[in-house]
Image (cartoon, rainbow, N blue to C red; front, side, top):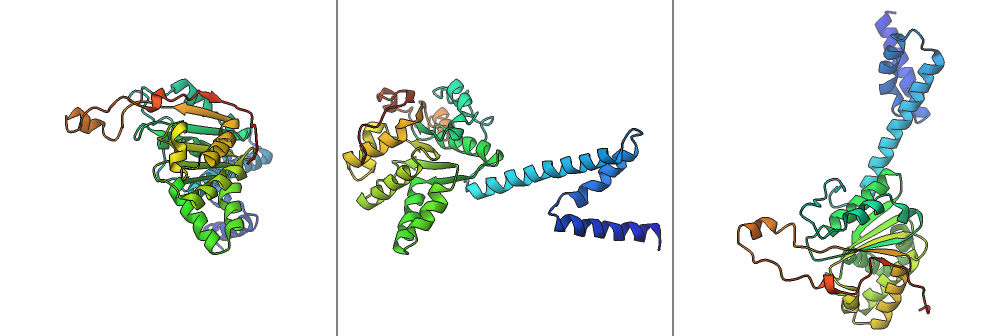
Length: 284
């Protein structure tokens, strides 16, 4: 048997063993690492084994980040580094960068991003979710409308408990985008309240909305009692990020004079504190 044939058979055996042990990166990594070790006079067999195991661990972390990112369902991949703070001058940069440390997720607290359309709320929500996924945490991204459609279908099929657990309870971070863009009927509002109640003090929420809190009952079947109870749970452990400014998506058209300049931002005058921690006075 030639040396080449022996090497090929040995590679096949190593690949089979690595697959059986679920060391998926080893077949591609051991050759280059062995060559590097051969050039080091002080390298021992233990050094070679340590390099192999470290490389496998690093590759596994990469695969894990990719898997959690795919599972999250992001509509696009947005990073905090790509957020245009130079344009979004109404975004509280220091507050956002502090939240990027993800301490709120570890404490099962919430973030509410408020502001006009086009000011980067969804971008920031995805950026927080991407950071969480890269830590190996289960994240789910959905719009408020898509979430309710899914829950309504599950309810009709008698699978509401299963779906509520898988979609709402299981993720370490649940991101719900575009609250208030489409109004909910009474049953839909009740379903959304169940989502908030299920996550309360158990898992983090990142919510985005173009509505001030005083207008949320308009989006939830005009039910002021239900909306107040829902906001009570959301804001008990929450950081509210108020973003002002004009739409990033329309900036070029405004510069060209195609669109008029935006009217003053009404959300900026809403009585929203930057940090909200209010004790619950009653349970609903």
